[in-house]
Image (cartoon, rainbow, N blue to C red):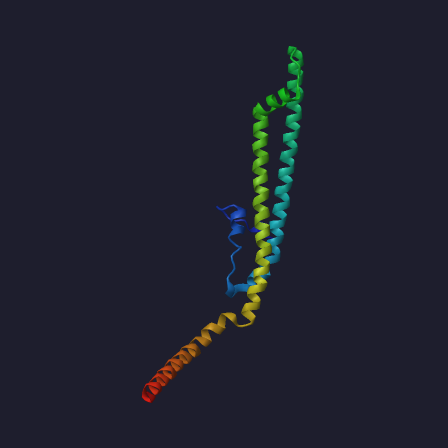
Length: 172
């Protein structure tokens, strides 16, 4: 089942999916199972965000062209020579242009956020592989079982050094 269908209340979907990036080394099997669906859902959201950005950019271009034609007609009607610079200045000052430009910028930010999450999931996939290799090699259990061995070895080494020190002192 898609994670998109599991949207919860409160946090945005982007925030919910960001929270799932972290890995628990004791639950690598679950992380490996959910990774493909998680990546697919984020990739789909990234594509949809890109589509919204493209639509916002197209709307901005349409509004600019419409406003440009209106400004040009107004300038010609008033007897002012319409130059590209004057037309652009008037278009950039129009509230419709500002609103559309802000919408386009917000859509771009959304695209970039989904792209960053998608990249993080690619890194997550690599880390699952690395952690699974470490787990399979006993990396996480080696320290626990050898800790006692190291303590005994250190104690024996200290005792041997002390004995050698005493022997050297007696030879002098």
